[in-house]
Length: 212
Image 1 (cartoon, rainbow, N blue to C red):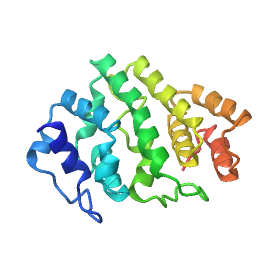
Image 2 (image 1 turned 90 degrees about the vertical axis):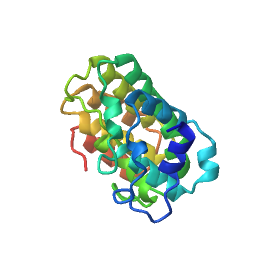
Image 3 (image 1 turned 180 degrees about the vertical axis):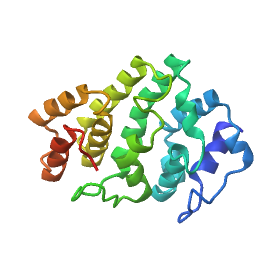
């Protein structure tokens, strides 16, 4: 399967589809992990996706990519013996946040966990909960862990409250294993990029590893 066919299957599900129940053609599940990472890196920078598909379809597509209930694509990020390629793939997530979450997740954050932007809002907020990487993943390297934390830190300084909450959520999740996340949040709280009291309170909680 080439990139365009894969893209159109993943992001072209009809609005209202349940990505858990809607199967792609079998070849969509048989893509080599390295090829899949290439597809993902390309998709996060592909301007045509935003012209061809609706916000809801894009949200469904991102659920297919990142939720292990919908596909096994997450396994592509667990090739820790290819450290350099995984680091490149994590860095590519910056385009996911910039070109997707920053653009589509615009609902005001009035309470934590209210994903009023639909499926894409759910993926944005829960990203580090459902993403394959975790500090205690078998075989993970320190460089990969550091790259992921650097990514969260970068998103913490976004001007988008939903993206900030995603970063806080991730840093809070990783706090029991990576104590530097507390200092990262503390430094941000000294000069926060939002005045939203809901987000600021959530960050203060996440400093202790207490998140929801």
